[in-house]
Image 1 (cartoon, each protein chain N blue to C red):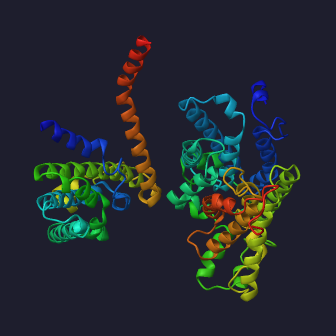
Image 2 (image 1 turned 60 degrees about the vertical axis):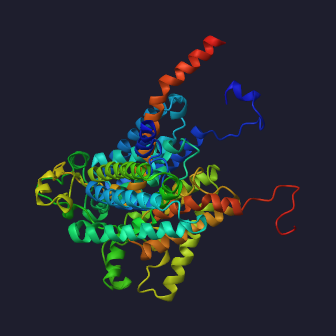
Length: 227
Length: 349
């Protein structure tokens, strides 16, 4: 059983990462990742919705008839998104205003309904919860890295606007390449998001290939000796 | 052609046009226009070309080495030189050096090599690099010099070198004093303030057709363009269709209201229209390839140039139009396939 959880976590964080491998939820991923803090904010909101919806879908999985499962999933997701939206509006109002339309749009994020359909509706509650958290954190990490990359290249800062999430104490976290940095607008604009995501995907493939190389040389070595 | 190719499949006769030869002819054809630009805008043009070409060639060599491709064999095809050169011609003469290098490297690495190198790039690399710079650094990318006939004298070689490498104007001067709006820029901002063409044309920036100096640069590029059509490096279709449609659309609007729409020749001899029509829109890789397709492609580039110049967010539009039509080129080719000999056409069926 422990192995099963390990599998779920590594799938969510790496092998089936929703941003880099499944390429689901690209609209918020590309649109909101213009700064690190925005990415983190949307990532955490998505993770919360994903975990909650996975648990609920898993709880009711034996009582929902297959014919009507998708509308039911959508209703569940929509209610959680509404909850998260109201909570953010109340406690992180400035971040809520920055993220704008993309918070209600979490409801259309294919990752969430995808996990509900592909995983939560077929697994018990604890496993569904772990899957929701792992997938959500994997997605958040991509958002953070992409957001950080775009912010750094685009405006030469990191953690800009951290006070929106962590309160005034975070104002001093802001790193800057200096006031002289001319900024490179394209990284902040949509083309930068596409190029950045493309580079991240290529980088993931590179790492995967590096990791699998020792094993494949062993295999070919064994084959040659067998021949 | 090396010996290996003899055993390859047909066709066995090699045409007179190797890539190296084609690119060489293009470079020769670019010379008159380049010299004209140097004459009007000073040494910055030559420095930009040097920077852009050398970084393009270095980037190409580096990526080819990383990809494990033969480096020297591919470098001598001169395509990286042409890309860097075309990009440099589109850049303002006093652009800070690192922006030129960045644009040129982006053009080669991202727009060309990441898609598979020469022959595989869906977009014109030089224009992709130009748009990257224009979108990222709008301030420096719109800081053009006035032609020397207006400013009195273009910056000298040392002044240009100083400004390009330090990114600062010479002591005691400001960028505003040195730079001047391009004719297209001026036309755009003045029209936005509801001024009439006849008033706008009173500015000393204007020559007979387009901007002073600019129109002669255009003429010399036109000469080079005619040269490569004559040597059959490019076909006449794309340039004629593009300039024709630009003239037609501009003429139409001018006829309707000559006080708010500049007369058609202005569109032809300002900005990058001539250079774009003969040297950029005709890129054999990213443009449409069927004869009818080339006419459609060129005509639509011309229409987009007018549309973006008149109502878009940027003063010049050749780069954006070419990139937009690059995206449409495969579709255009699909619908304009010539009938294969011996087969019924769509109409006969």
